[in-house]
Image (cartoon, rainbow, N blue to C red; front, side, top):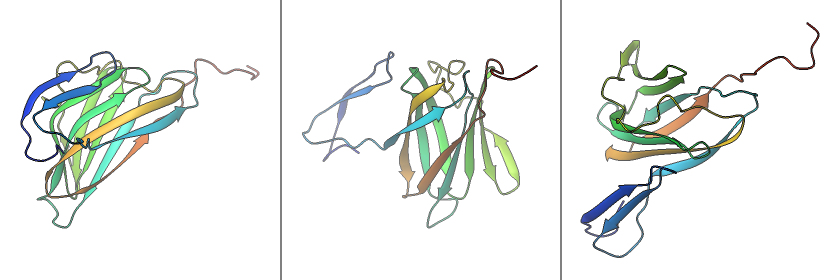
Length: 168
């Protein structure tokens, strides 16, 4: 949300840490709809997460938010999305693996693959993982239509290089 009646005159993204910079023609504070969360991977190897976005609203199916960014600020990996809509009453999953990323929308019993064209070309798809220890994860989405409520949770399995301290 930009303050007042704003015209954006400049936009840049720092490729090193994923920070965004906006230049606009008024004074005030811009509100960035995003959340920085800590996730601890207690494994000894990288874990590949699944992010689940669930949306609810007053009017199911007409209100939605647009997922814009998912970033691991600890590793520097950033995923920028191209018009991935989280529709009220639906679930969107973003699933990472060593082979890349898949995005699905679940509505009732239907599962639709949204992967084609959903990820911006400069994204770090193959590098997105939770490293062992603390990971700072940034999520950003815009309320595009109405004011839906979006909740997100992350699923992952601990991975280990080997079994230590066990008899073989």
